[in-house]
Length: 128
Image (cartoon, rainbow, N blue to C red; front, side):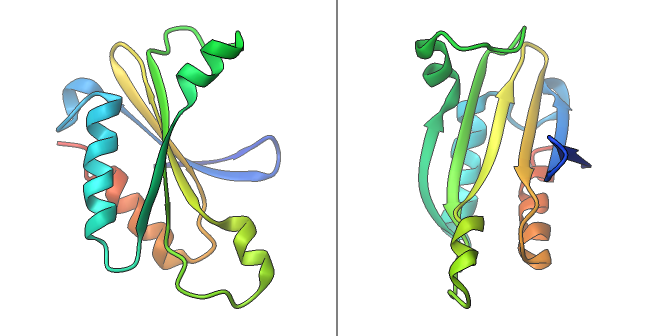
């Protein structure tokens, strides 16, 4: 995984995998795979899938060259509300972008290190 700071303030973790090095290699298959993992987690709850590609296309918005599909799987680990500001960091989202030969997966750094490690594990488990 690679950590970058997007727009000078957002800590984003990214994993780029060639399709031939993955167990599954389409956006929808990855969404279903992650949905199962989330549903089997003792705390996480699946919320929704957002079709970012279709939304942007319908608006006539700019789309990076070669992008075939782009969706976010939305879920939450929230076990407590110790401060009102924690809601600003929830729910969590993992973005899946599909190109002809590769998949790029991105997510923001989680506020709790142990949950960040869980999300990294989920994403890395896509690799063969």
